[in-house]
Figure 1 (cartoon, helix red, strand yellow):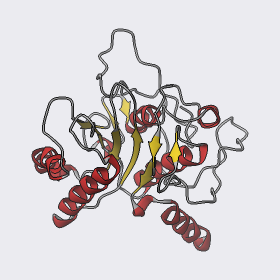
Figure 2 (cartoon, helix red, strand yellow):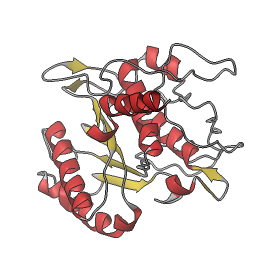
Figure 3 (cartoon, one colour):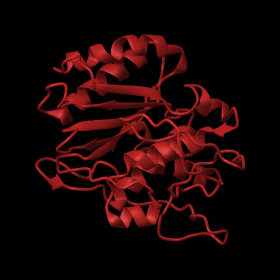
Figure 4 (cartoon, one colour):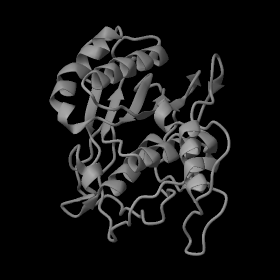
Length: 268
């Protein structure tokens, strides 16, 4: 997947490597270490002289563009770009998305997966903030005949709260009306561990490469225009979705990114 940072070029999975069934992505290393992070919004319409993507602001609200009773069958370029920008903006402000959570709401017996996703994120966020931590996330809803309604969440989890989070994440599903049963929850770090985003490199692997692979997976249901522009490698139908198909937390949403960009311009 081609992201807004030309230093990213993760290698493909090696043959015989174990891949988790629910997520089907592998954490990969990079051959060249990236430089320091300076966030700028990315546009997918033009490239720089080195073949990477020229970083310019993107107008519009981005991620959560499907509302109410509107039906959609794929992520648009606008939504996929906004999710990608949000993920790298989170890293730039010190809230690297270090936890990948998939909740199969239909398997859990929940009929309104959108409301349940919002409730679960509120419970997680309230708990994290009550312990002095900060919270950030992006999410993508999918649906299909085999897995049913489910959501992929990339979130920032303060590493010192990991044990408490692990003890509570299943309980929050129950609080949302879901059943605790096999196949409902898949939850794992993005990278080698939950501090990888802050360290950058661990055991020869770059956090950004791991984030790239995870984003490539959750954007696999994007439309052809988005797939071509962002060079998304995976392809799998995301199914029919009613209402919001994707979204981000307010602190990494388009308005937050544009505010930060204006501050940079004013400082210059």
